[in-house]
Every structure is written in structure tokens, then in C-alpha cells.
Image 1 (cartoon, rainbow, N blue to C red):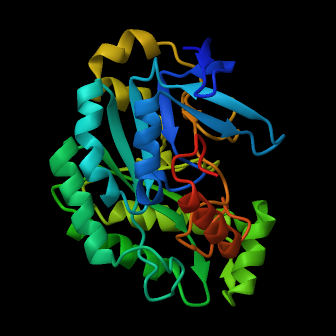
Image 2: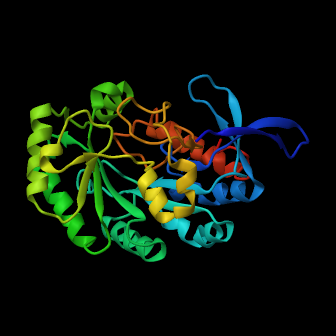
Length: 314
């Protein structure tokens, strides 16, 4: 499966080359459902977006002409509800990677809605999209002087109870703070004393999680540690099997899809086009790798609101 190129005529009459991805990711880089749903569906109706490469600063264009599936990533997908009929009208399938953590008491996610409301949003989303179309992520699992492994297991058990009958899979990852200097800096600036996971701690946590018998498929996201002895697999967040189950007509198109080379080396996702922009999510999560700082992300969000019809987020 390749992202072919086509000629695209912009609103100003200029003609540019554009990617035409079959699968769009919206988005690993920011929370499009929570903060940019209006923008996204406006761009979907116009047929394209402009995307800036965060590494070289160059702009490129993405056409939706060939898009048949969208994977949404969010901590608050409630703003998606009014727009879901549009996807059905366009014949575009979707599922939601829903990060549903519980760091309320510790204040690590200051701008997400209350946990009870997020659980209800999850259930309502399943009612709209179907069982299996909303994947629960507890991501990342972070250890601090206020959060122990025991605390995390209790939090997971509590949320699992609230989602009983509405969820089939739990994806989790262990916070790898040392790999992202800005994350460590932001945590320190917020006065949060964190602790890196050792491999032994990961294994012991996973053993105890599996022993809880939650009735869920368990998988890790981009983790090197092998937890297969506990029945825990390596996840594929852009998952060809799930896409084909939800949209069987796409099976011939993605049957031989390769792993996305643009992602981390341990990522199992197949190729998609992510259209998000780093440093634009105002959730303010203390451990966020996608923002330079909560202040700059909020400033960029306010810039977006001044020009919400722009062809890129900022």
C-alpha cells in the first residue's frame, strides 16, 4: 500500500503535488477530536490539508480523495459525535484510540474532563461505532513519588469496571521519560518527582495485571520488553486486522501493507498519513512528549482559533 501522489488545485489556483493516503491518522501529534474536530471536518469537506514536517519545516499537501479509513486518537473524543454521520455518508470507516487514564488526584492531566464523564463518553462512542471500534489506552503508566505500581493497578481495575461490556482491549505503555528530554524537564518544572521503570518492574507489573483477569486482550505500545508469557502482545495501533474487520472491503488494499517506517523502531503500525501538528494540544498533560511546553501549546491553540478555516492547524 503506497501513498500515491496527485495534482491538487488549491483555493488560490496554484497546483501542487499531494499525497493521497488510504488511511489517515488524526493524530499522534495532537488531540484533533478534542480541539480541532470542526477544523478537521471542514478540511475533509474541502478535500485536503496542508501539513508541515516538524523536522525540516517544509509544507506538503494531503488529499482525502483516496481516504477510506481514519484512526482517531484522543483523550476527549466527545466533540466527534456531531460529525460521525459525515464519515458514514462519505463511506469512510474509523476507530478511536481512546487514552483513558486516571491521574485526577495527581493533577497530571489538568485539562481533561472528569473521569466519570470520560467513561460515559467511551460508552456512548461504543454505542455509536460498535464494540471493538474504541480501543482503551492507559498510556503512559507513570511512576512518581505519589503513584506506585499498586496505585496504577487499582486505577486500571476501577476504569475496567466502569467500562465492563463496552471494551475488548487494553493497550498500555510504560513512561520512557529519559528518551524525551523535554518531558523530563516539564515534569521537573511541575514539581513532579518521577521514577523510570526498570525491566524487572515492567515484568512484575504485567504479571500482576494479567493475574487480575480483566477479561480484556492486553497489549503494549512500542515496548521492547517481551511479555508474551503473560498473554500480552505487541500492539499495532494502526492495525490492519481491526481495519479489515470494521471495513472488510479494504482487505485487498491493505493485505500486504508494510510497517510504517516513519514511526519508532518498535512501532508495529502499518503505513498511514498523520496530519497532526506538534505543540498544539492544550490538555496540558505534564508528561506529554508532543508539546515543547503547555504554555506554547496553549498559545498555538489560541492562534488556531483566530483563523479556524486555515488549511493547516496553525
